[in-house]
Length: 370
Image (cartoon, rainbow, N blue to C red; front, side):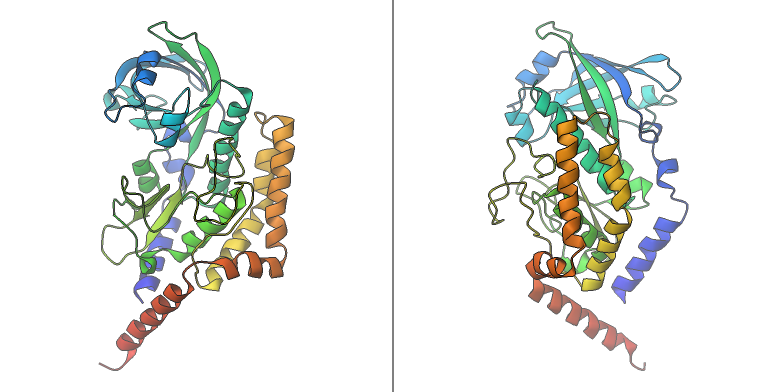
């Protein structure tokens, strides 16, 4: 009964006044590539990459708005992330805008934005970024409970003149709090999530989406020692105890669909290559996986069109990725493969059965005469 009440509450929120596009800030209401220039002490910022404490350094953000006018905002930058901050020659950046200054501009509502850009100055790293951007867009096609992204054609200018200017295609990611606000939920900071509190509908969709992009670098139940729950998953819900937890995936560069040369599958998964799909999702009542498969099938043409129509993907990467997506759908098209490669591989079947039995017992306890 508790799960049913929570599900009804979430469905009501989803169908209320929350048009995802209308409630997104202006920056994320448009899918056109935004042209911008970042002028900042980039060489200083990159020099801090290995430090735990990294200072924000002041710079300027110049962009061309939808009306063609050039606009300028103050911005502070610092390097961010974990693996990529240590590995990349050009580590990812956090952009920190002034809330008072962006009010009334195209960046209204923006404060701190994650910037994803090529981590090395080689063409294949540019393709990795575009593929990760398209992976985010793929999940946006499947559900509004997802991160919005915006593609940029970004020129970097080192104000200390230690680095020559360069231009890359990059993208920014909607903030955690804005995702939560847009879908009418809270961003939860919890050490872990109980299986019984998971929103099974969203969880099944997340697991199958991660199989589509071949990503096992995530958890919907726990994080690492250094982070809140959950690893590469944002947890949304209501603050009240006993309400459902909605997982939203991010950080997709370790996926097989991106196939970055530094990507390795987790040691817990019995594959040697990130391109090899292996279902590592939790066991859930089958009706939720059936519904998630139906959603993925219904959105198949939209997902394929997203990659086929990308002007930024090189032809070789486009053809290779479309074939990779087709191979995922070959699994969904075959009930025997669904049974063998998805349902039979799920983790925690005993936990699922115990949880469902406990739920039935609670329902039975409350359904008798007073």
